[in-house]
Image 1: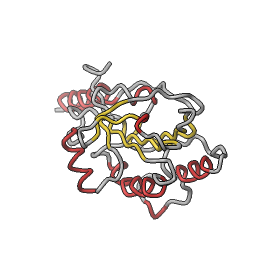
Image 2 (image 1 turned 90 degrees about the vertical axis):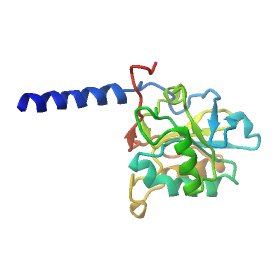
Image 3 (image 1 turned 180 degrees about the vertical axis):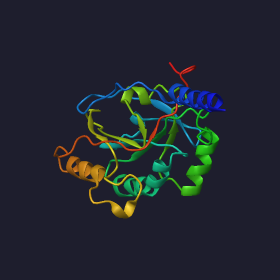
Length: 206
């Protein structure tokens, strides 16, 4: 019986290692990002270059199934409502492999976006080739990028409370965007993203 339990535990650990190990290199603060084009939940392709009037972007890697992402959905909606008209729209990207994370498929994304009435694009990184360039490791994981330079100005968490919105005392993303809007550099340019690991299958992930 002990041998069977040990074998089961090892098998589970092996699955998690295969499914959740990702590359950790990527953009740093001050790096210039490459443009990308991904499919939105309206079945149209979206690129950063489509946003002619934007001053920058709040790019958030998020998903349907992670409890941290779910806990931050209302905050993400609020960020878009506050900053889209000021030139910093939210661009949400689901980086998960739906074969590993059930419920994170493209059709599931459409359902979730409709339920929550997302006001921002919710893009699918179907080939999983965008999130590694950013170096995103968690959902949610935020990158604030200026449009004129396409440079990363902030990387990390939305605020200092990963799950409980009522416990927030420091709003990292809002502080960063507010600074950029008046021509200043954010005081905090990097914080620790807390959330679920991005789900990949190393048997197919390159």
